[in-house]
Image (cartoon, rainbow over all chains, first blue to last red; front, side, top):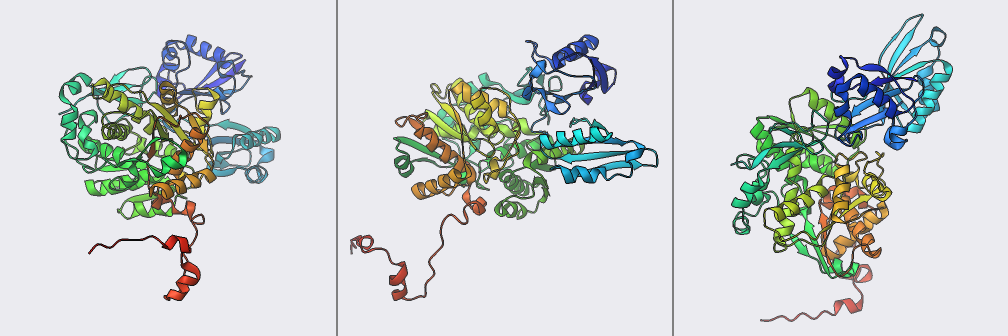
Length: 171
Length: 421
């Protein structure tokens, strides 16, 4: 199983300045194991002396905090995104940024309007580039987790590629 | 003279020198001030404290500034009240109220943390101070920045109570209302703090700022005759105050000014914003963030920065955590006002409401000493009770009008007053 792991800025020097790493594993625990074997410096930064994930490190699988899932036993599937994010005092998980890439056949469709119309979400375009053949939009999405998941599912279904942007706030 | 030895990560214990920083760069845990307790123990006595001016600075050895305080010299030493009326209403014997609703200068416990934060910001050489706030902190930073000669930038959720907006603007600050919850304001401020060289009192100055809350606990101990109550109920927003009251008691014990701390600490939240209570009751030590929905806006923090440590304090002390509905908050405010003559804000309604609930549930025993922390003033949150306190009777200036509708019943006018000539 290959997943994408997002590395926060303060830890990038331990991964050769890579901010996204392709890692392997069937669970978050296995992915972390693979990661810390491949980049040994990461181990003591992510896990404490007992081997637990450090309290002020949050790990998300596709935007879901693993502590509210099955923790290190949380299963991952091909192409999932695992994000490692330092929990700086009082961050909010509710606003997300994603990059949407549109295939040519969808460029004329009112996709962003539909997100706001069909789901309880507020969207805000932060940057965009649309030409005849391809288009991408960076979008800020505000709303509840369940509505957000439904919207992502909808986008997937109609063929828009969705890539969450890291929520690291200590750039 | 300084009694601080540096900063230390609360998680991995790595040490740092005193600087405007708040996060451990190794494990991302929060940093805390380290003191030289041996030196403090040798120098600080009950008599020495009692001989000093009545402000929070009488405990200055246990506060993280190097020189004399430059901001908020008159903050603190608020009344500790032995309750009669509320004690009767709640059916308890030994009840106390620590009343920061009359703290100087902005009528909430936040003046304590801000006077430390700004005195420290001055020592670091900052000229501009800032904060993310649910209102009380905004008032306090604006006021004390004005008094201390700082420029200030204050970030709040845009839909705060009018009293808290006005009570910030009057001091000539830069007030920025954010369309979003407090948690979103806080997140934005973390980004701003990274990019501007300001003293954000509850971000980069947080380790120093938070220490100011200990004085709430120090004063309780001193005002009770160097004893602490068996049960202390504290409102929780970010969860810092509750941990610092406990820390304050423990510090006094460790330097020999208290003989033992038999206190259980109880955390109070509103049901519409109860992430810490929910975690306590679920028996876990991580906080699931919420989207707050409550009239107790000063407690409306869905992702509390010190939530984990608040839980730890409650559990270590053997206390409990509970929440109350908005309806019970209003009832709590009215109860305190009508039994003690203290008009507290919604957060105080939460604390009174939770105390009542815990006594009724038998969790707090009726015959032991109990202290309720009143942390803010009701004049700031008038909207919450506007339609719940009745209206004045309006009459013409005629005795007959008064007797028709305004006069008390016959039995109530029979008080005989003896006039001695």
